[in-house]
Image (cartoon, rainbow, N blue to C red; front, side, top):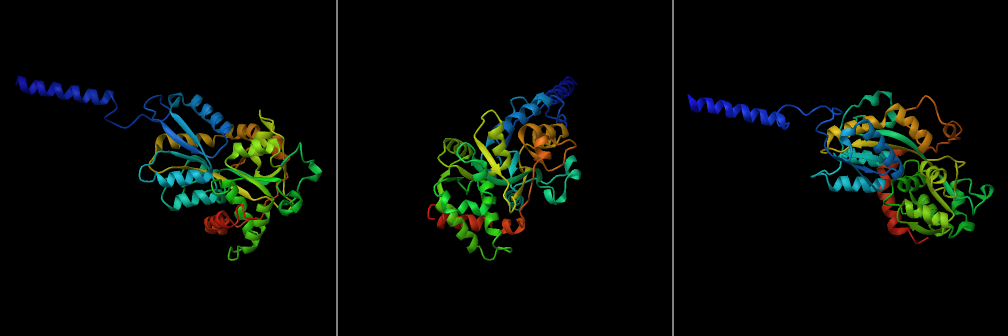
Length: 351
């Protein structure tokens, strides 16, 4: 009898201990202030943006204070890292990637399918039909110039102006293979000469002329900004948001932009949940990214064009004379890797 009572008492103690440490029952719901687990974000966003958003996120969910790690890298680098870690995922959120990059990740089984609350507000063109990725912002790709060294009336007005011999050794380009932005711009330049992508040669010829005018390929965006500001190159092709962030933010870089007369490639820049990561933290963070107040703040202060429209647009956005280029992103998605590999092997530094 004594032994039986002892076993009952021991069982009660074990049960209580498991309950106290969370070993039994379901985890506490997100936002409850307990059991928040660290999660890692791979982001191609500007560090100013990621720092601000994480600060706002942890203010709303203080249980995640110190538990959100952001690794900033190029969009293509996010894909390659997530691909390399497929058998042992280290990241939970993919934040900032081109439509074609995210689609590649989805088709390779790297992304988790789900249906967040904001999905119903989004145009079907800006999200994956299976819920594996969602467009966050629209990124126009435009011509960038140093406005201290190039007067506005003398800046190129369209893409073909960039290959004018008068700009020889005046163009500086972010190195293409690692950059989702540059891969998209270069692929768009090829696709505009070949609607179905079957004959990329005219596009290659155009990029060879651009290479002849290119003085250097910058290793990363910061390198691009510094060298542009110093005048090591006075022209580039880049996304509008980052140009405005550098020109209008604290850095006050001497950058202006031109909306190309023939149109700007408009990227759908999106977000996704990495399969095998911290699902709870990832879902909470991605839902937060589409909070209406946050989207309005990011549009006003960080020059984002939200994929889900906001009620009150900031002045810069309401006055933006956006002219989209007619780009077939399905064709780009199927051919981008081959085109960029060809450029890297046969055109770069050979123009």
